[in-house]
Length: 200
Image 1 (cartoon, rainbow, N blue to C red):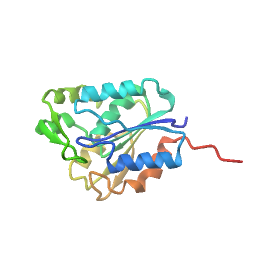
Image 2: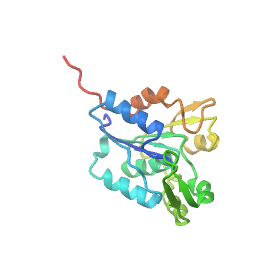
Image 3: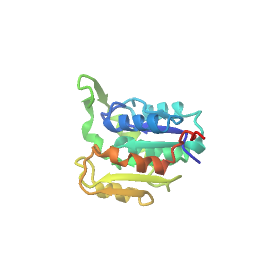
Image 4: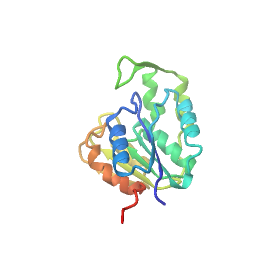
């Protein structure tokens, strides 16, 4: 089955304006215009974020949807993929954000608009724990793109977390996957994005 509906989930302090989200959106619009693409601005609360995603994808066909997630969005994408039993592509995915973000409780600013503030509340750590699906076998195909040069997350933890995934392990690189454009074709092929019919 080809993918007709694609969800993209951004990371902590990020937004749909992230370079990867924009590249993915442009690639889908240009090469796969029949695919429905959605990259929502996620609220700081993990529970609220997943409630928004669940509501926004409730009418999507489970057999032909897929999800891409970056960093914290990768953690969320793993949860979504389990609920929907759909393929996922994870970009330097957060493995244990409840642990890692506990030290970021308090006022935060957005990467793409430093004038925009949000509050990361203590209860959000427990909300993150509630979304952990590490003890479950993957419900569908997974692909991981992981950079050894990630300056935020430990690539070894990421690789160990997803033993069943098709792995693209990059020598060097960075957390933001600044070479993401080079991986778009591989992501597209893995997700089998629906292509427009050929004329003639």
